[in-house]
Length: 308
Image 1 (tube, helix red, strand yellow):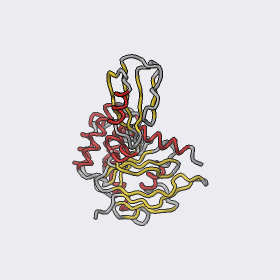
Image 2: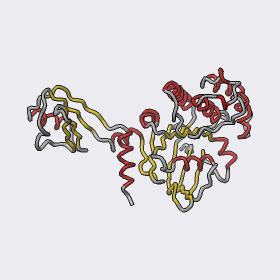
Image 3: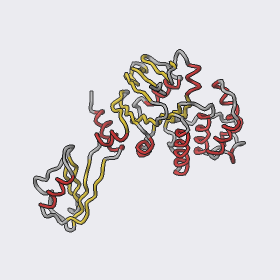
Image 4: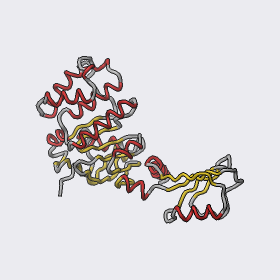
């Protein structure tokens, strides 16, 4: 059995009497791309800062590839690379200067070949000798990714890596993330772009109010928590939703020509289609769809707001 890349047990953190992280536990397996999602204030960044060793743990434990991040902090800091949500740069160094000495912070020798690979892969070469205070926001983000990877961490944490970046950089970043993951790097990702998490992550945990409210494979979340719906387009308008239509939710749009039908958990699509046929509705098209991760996320986190 492989040692988990990250094992969090009963982790908690308070700030001035307010519980920011509330007794969370989960593991990440080596080679996974794991998504940690949640609304603003859910406790994600606090959890990440405790994993990275820059915020004290109130209770619980964190192990990184079997090493306790409090007792073996020198080892665990070398094993982890973090790209923080906030832009953190050394304003008056050039990219070249900063990357040359940054691995030394972790007690790791500068690897010129790896450094050059990061520079080339992230498109930093044309800007290599510019001081960072003069770089664009997107270029600063590229540098932060290179900085997080310069010491070859086995676990890379990306906290909102695509916040405020253009489409080109977003695609460049995700291509690179898949590449380094295939080479063996484990990834922990937070993002507010939930379609990214749906496409990238093997498993997803959702936090709300400091608690872990969901943890499952991405496909399982979509299958078990997502709703199935059918858009039924009609040739001529109808005045109202037909009586006794067997589905969880049935809504008619303002034009009277589109029915949105949400199926109950145990209802088959065929059963509903037969009922529509028996009603003699003037159907021109039927469009099935499943709930996205974003819809599931909103459903779960909004429900949490009503809890005491």
